[in-house]
Image 1 (cartoon, rainbow, N blue to C red):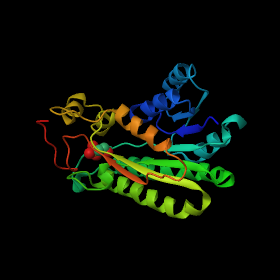
Image 2 (image 1 turned 60 degrees about the vertical axis):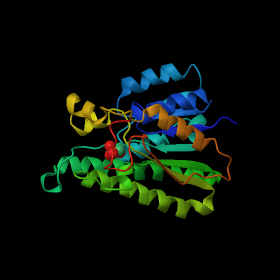
Image 3 (image 1 turned 30 degrees about the horizontal axis):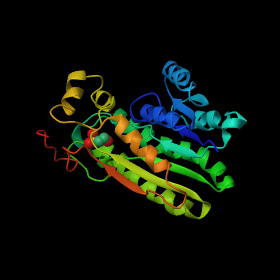
Amino acid sequence: MTKIALITGATSGIGKATAIEFAKNNINLILCGRNTDVLKKLEAQLSKQVTVTTLNFDVRDKIEVFKKIESLPESFKNIDILINNAGNAHGLDPIQDGNLEDWDAMLDINVKGLLYVSKAIIPGMIKRKSGHIINIGSTAGKEVYPNGNVYCASKFAVDALNQGMRIDLNKTGIKVGGINPGLTQTGFSKVRFKGDEEKAEKVYQGFKALQPEDIADIISFVVSRPYHVNIADLTVMPSAQASSTILNKNI
Ligand code: 8X3
């Protein structure tokens, strides 16, 4: 039977690439994001391949999260796959110079937003005794790097929640796995550096960074494993990268 996937942060980067890849693989889509225009454009594009609907909400707004997910038409209610992708970095400052709004944004979106969306979807999965949750973490959730402090903490939290969800949901038939990308060329650094394109581009210069499609391809592989196979925790880096702090720009 055709599966249904809900993707948060579907309007750009890894989320958008995953939506495109899922559509190719005949997975129906619930695309979630904050930008209605982009959501609608993507819906129009992917509706040629699969059935698509969109939900416009900010994962920080818990009331909206529950209201919008609750409002899904019957035909979209049985969500098979949840891709907890929405997340970003805000700032790259030493802890003593950190900006409180940046800290709030990262913890509210990357951690609490992931929790709200999961909480809204898990009960239905439990009822159906099936489901697959994929949490998009980061290499920053495996190893802290200078000035990464709160962003890294938010991604360590995603890693902890990925493990915690897997343990608690193990008896329910729901599979839970995390994918932790390293340097991936998306709008990530532009957001981190608050629109400073030059600074953002420099992050990916001198080596071949991961592309959002590389991660989407891996997500597609992960969700297509048979039920008894759960890819629990996967870290992916560009070949030029060896750790959060070691990058060989000559590759
Ligand atoms: C993205 C990877 O190294 O830019 O989460 O923080 S990194």
